[in-house]
Image (cartoon, rainbow, N blue to C red; front, side, top):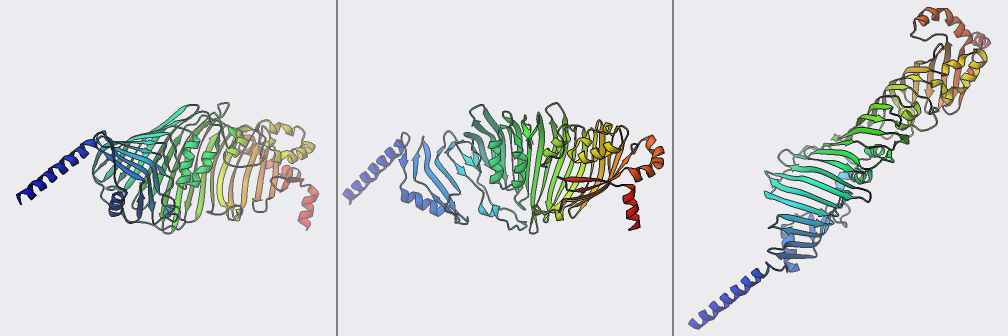
Length: 507
């Protein structure tokens, strides 16, 4: 018995010595954990909806923990053959309190985020995050929601059920010049809020993929309208998500040096974009505010305005308010209109206050377009618009010297749009001496013009106009009245003669 105890003691002693030497060796090398042990641990502690695979797991006291080729799959994803998260390598260095991830990829949000079936949510996201002391996170060549900087560094800490990622820096070493963004992000389960902000310098192709990955197509046309932007763009982007009801807020503050906007040369175009997306009932609603925008044209012409696009319960509303001294043609192009509406030499100071309503998926069906608005142009040459060429030719035959109207004109009108038909009773175009009053409608659906145009010898708001208009009205009514028909691209002007009026009365 005594001999047996002696042998047992020696066996334990040498086993402890060998084990101690093995542990001591881990200070100078790394040891691969058997695959069966790794698989058993992951299966035991991973959430039931996740499948985690690694090629290898290495452990060392000073070298830390090294994971090779991490892939995380979500069983609930519609396309679960692609990993939800992956990384070529992850190293955890506990003594240095640093985590390094190489080629970390998180390319898209869970598939439920992109579904078109919407349902109002009102439930907390419950959970308990373990307290983790602050450590440094380093990402090399990551791909997070299609944002692909060369390097990301941040300070990470979990405390009081709040995950904080502070002092974030993203670096893009482009060929021409390096760009950086600094910011923070927090997941706060106490307040049920996810929020963050980044600011610094970036380029269009750095930010646009994020809007695609977040499935925010409404913001893309405004970003794509910026072309030929010079150099890096000072930008600030902040976001906030309410975890209880999934309300989403996004703020962009951009200061590009232009370049062009919708093909219009601009010197600068400082502006803000605010996007608010929320689900109520079974409808995904949003409010997208572009502005206030402060732009400067190539010759120093100011442009100020705000555009609000709101979608509520399947109906879109667009509200536009703007002031500018840019050419009218440029303003139309900036607003997204196409076609040769006016000569680009038609300068002037313009202001507008417009409102449109139309179904969410109206497309090219203008029969459901409604709205109202007010438009004013001063110090312009409105009569140089190509559509007025026919009227000028008719007037030149009947009123000598009428060409002076084209030298300095101003215009204004109030209008309403009902089911795709624009109606105005007070479209005025005024020159130094003459003025033109138009009333009628434009059928957008069939592209038909039907206006009556009367030429007057005085301005509508002048003192002379109030005195002389009653005296000259019979003359202008009988001799200087015209009809505008045809289409916007092919307008037709007719002179309404006295004989025409007699025939209309005797019909």
